[in-house]
Length: 420
Image (tube, rainbow, N blue to C red; front, side, top):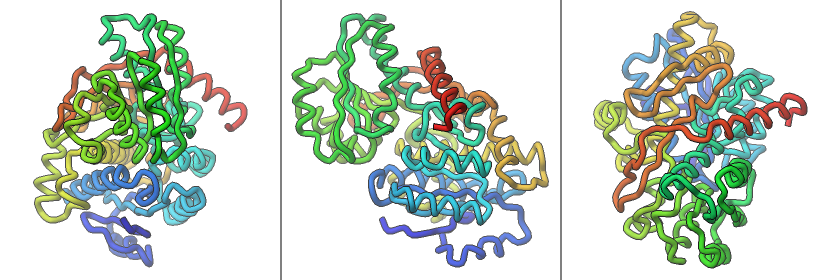
């Protein structure tokens, strides 16, 4: 994909040069500007394209219906290619042009931008990325995961493994294969604490990013004779890991990924070959949710879709819609509190941190964001690939949140002291 810079407005993406154009278009209307610098071309590629497509389609749906509480959403979209200088440049440009929210969809980028977002009071969304301790809103008031963080996802997976073993993991071996980056290492503290608590043995196998070659890792995993395997990466790292797990004969019904597994990954790996593999599901997949049906009818059906129709309803697409609904709900709340703004980071922050029991008409589990909890309650579910789609095998649930929040508070307290 070739993407330089776009400003996305009410159903159409136009090259944003000069960016004054959208302001002129909406000169008589109230607007809220989001900055979406994301990685379309380097590591996350099709993950980002589907996620961003879902975001844009939802914004089109909202804008075409008159906006939210009289406000129209403008999304400024750029490609930072997971490159920190480019991402910082995009952030600073967004700040100059009045963006009150940024969604970089990248752990290294989000980590680098934390001090700027806090100082500038610009809301940074870190869905399934960034720092897990950003769930602590008292330490990170302008950093909002709005979703289950990596520690919570690890806790959910371990709970499912425990359920599979009829309530006990004592004496079991769990292998954790991960990309050798801060993102890949993120779940290790929780997995280690739970290993002591539950009595299982944990063996970690890191691989060099981006993960194109893992051929030396997976034979070692096979020889370790694990009872369960967790593989942890994104983009190419996930498809290579799953391919190698299959090649080495690991039973798929005892293998789980994080949220970063989608129908598009299965197309690469082989839909039938991956049958049985599990993943964490943060929202409902497929096309059955009401909001996805509305997008198909009122956006895609009218020729205003932001990407290929066959990607509507994939896991990554629905994650984008999920985050867009939460962003818009934040705008709705902010407008209820202060109908005439001014539209600033603090204005939107008040709205985002007052989201209550929100489900987007059943797309996501009940989500409540408070000044203390930016994760939203910690609920997710486990889904299993049946060869054609991901099928939920649990209801929405939370697990090991005592362990997760102990780690959150330990790290957030250190951030308060050191800024790191």
